Length: 228
Image (cartoon, one colour):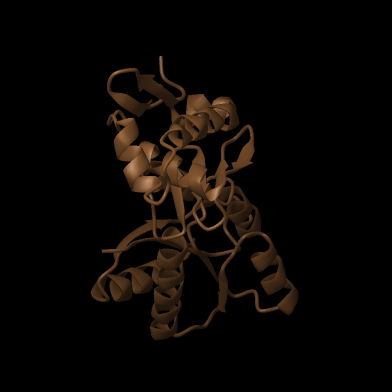
């Protein structure tokens, strides 16, 4: 079940949207102000956000821009502002779609489904873990301090370790998995060394690549940020 956040200061619109979208199989959360929306976003992850522009406390454009600093969840602007310049401003501030009032509940539902479909395709090409963004398509690892691009083999090696934290892979296992057509098992140590060098800046975000001389290689997850 997809989680939808609807941000609107009109109780009647909220009630109609909740009733319809719940009947369509969505789990719906509402917020009547920008501040309340931020609180809801801090509580859980949503699959789509339906956002009014004319909120009583925060301009919807500014709110969307703030949302984009913490999540790439699809945003649909749902507003009575029908000037083409408003639509452009909404899209330029991070919106994915723009629907004007009055509107059809069926059209709103259809647009949500489209964005959820696009979001699923996008999620297959990326991983977000805490403050780390991993772009599978471009083999890029992004942290708040720096970005790095990896070669195909470096990325495959990193992902194998990263997705299996603290699991020890022997040199032979890594060699057979990632270099099935190679005759030089020494390439494993070479690539581990390159990874450590390239990712040294990001250890506090992605963990540390360690090796046990007798057993093999593994990643130790980082300490949680903001902890004691």
